[in-house]
Image: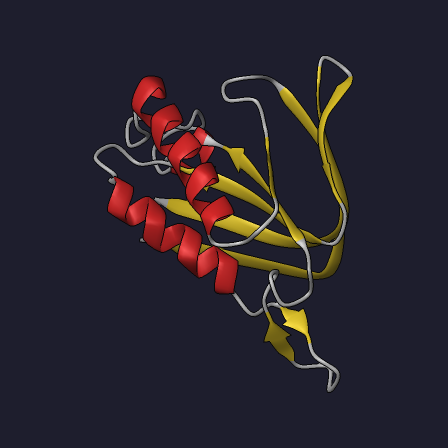
Length: 145
């Protein structure tokens, strides 16, 4: 399981030019599920995400989490995080989980994140999404379990 989190001022996710989800201050998180990943891993990932201190405190140090600043998370499923481009020019996605299992873990991760007290919005699994985001910093964190 892997995520790429980016600190944002604002983000809007659309499908077919229609807005689906929007957040203000918070994190846009691209979430990839590897074949064989588990619910336990999803929980650990979401706990890390909810408590990740990437927002500045009064002294200008990254010491606050998304919960601490009253921010939101836009969690976007992205199988391409498991793209392997070592051979040739066309990435292989054989490490990514099959869609049915990946979607089940994505939905579980969303619901678990909500239980941690973080407002969360979602993308549309498997859809061709457009995401407009205004990064702050920029701050980008990659985490894998």
